[in-house]
Length: 321
Image (cartoon, rainbow, N blue to C red):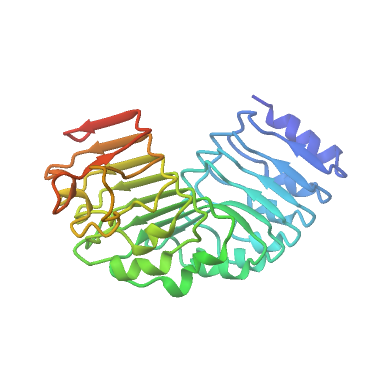
């Protein structure tokens, strides 16, 4: 653990410092006197679990080019004057699981190229919290992960999302509010469609009967997790998800079949084999609390059986953990 007095000495005596690496030093606060380092270009505060807030003075570093905050798990918010960091190009905040919102004005940093995670928390964020529309102004951004929390059921957010604009998005987390879950979300969720190169998709508290249709276009998806989607009845025929390696289903109370293949449209009528290669890359299936589950699919031909050639891990839990 680094002594805060040492940090103060650095800020006072090395005012021409360009690079400051304090990652994993056990810091619980960042001294406001950091603003003395006017020439600082690179600041690494990652892996300091106890930092909850950054001082507003950090926005008075006009030459800051890179800010690393990865795995600062205690971090709850970012400085609201972030628009002052006009030269910021890279900000890494992956692993900051307690961040509840992004500050407003992030979209003004048009030179920003790297942003590991963008968190939107619609209901509890302050009025000056950033919304999804901030992303529409960041043309050169490489956003690796996007988490949207507290989506309101039945409301169309397409005008703000425009996720197809970000070709670098690898991980998408969509979490609806736990309130008013009776509303149908199928149509509203269409505006959240990402590009097909998405790798991981997490959907929680979604109120639709079926998953969004755009999910079937995610040809490169390797992980799909559906949690507490209690009205979900089935997944559409998903033979197009040929890259999927892991599938997690948690608490789909009304689901009777994982896939609705009653019309067999996904399968060739000329096939002579009774075994259908359903998910050719699937290695892991986890099913938890699926009280009405009757089988993998509903099909008019009982001789057709699903085949999972690479499945190595199947977990079924009949109760909540």
